Amino acid sequence: MILLTGATGYIGSHTWLELLLAGHQVVGIDNFVNSSPVVLKRLEALSGKKLNFIQGDVCDPIVLEALFKKHAIKGVIHFAALKAVGESSAKPILYYENNIGGLINLLQIMQENDCRNFVFSSSACVYGDPEKSPVKEDSDLKPENPYGQTKLMGEQILRDLEASDPRWRVAYLRYFNPIGAHESGLIGEDPMGVPNNLAPLVSRVAAGRMDELNIYGDDWDTPDGTGVRDYIHVVDLANGHVKAIEYIFSGKPSLTVNLGTGVGYSVMDVVRAYEDVVGQPIRCKVIDRRPGDVALYFADPSRAEALLGWKAVRSLKQMCADGWRWQSQNPLGYKS
Image 1 (cartoon, helix red, strand yellow):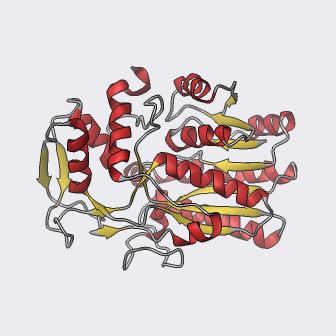
Image 2 (cartoon, rainbow, N blue to C red):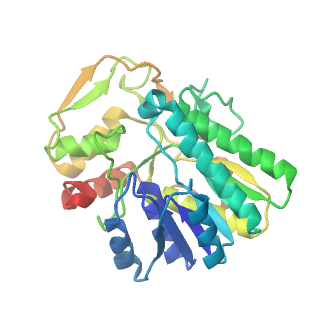
């Protein structure tokens, strides 16, 4: 049995489905702080299976203890965390308390129950402003916000735990910019409030929910002047987690890998891909650069292919087409 924390979130829900389709037994936990119970019915419809799920918080040891007593959990994929970069700067204590406190609580319960296989949802944020792209796993680690710090601190806690007990097996997955949705349009990204990421903003402008897309600078040192990032389809990302837990279960040593496409797409590349899919122009407005933004940022994912046998296969157009299908079928997200 695999425990999936943050199971009904954007990446968690897609990973849950891919795990089930790969034949794994899964129990999910989520507190619905940034997700919806509607996800559960949709996952059951897509998988054809009844889900094992408990509503709860990984910061609550009583909930976790009961869960581990009820299920023979062999490994954990840990998504449960607060994830808004801007909010983390405004509320750093909240982010450290939740992201680090929840991780420590989970690891303590795992140790008590002789479970030492772990897949950690890390982030490209641990690299901060990289000196060059593509970014390799041995690049300098210098996060620039509390959210990124919690991911780096989480990695360090796990590395110290491994050093103290060699029975631990950990996959550290640093992923870049997930976008898109399941091709069915039944599950996708449903951010609370105003989105922070590019793709859901473009979708909302296309759907008429927002007037225009703000582009933060068109004078960057990139081919078209707009910022370049590594966008990866969320289903490709989910499959990376399936490969990672299977790798860990095989008894192989811990590993750290980037999950990205290895291709940099500009803001305007994404806008044009959406325009092709939607069949109408996306209204954009160029405004001043944001502090902390960088021109170019994309992954070197070759280690993930070499060690996990994984690579991203879905194109930017498919990412946008699947994202638009989700938006079209769910104009107000899971509230639709």
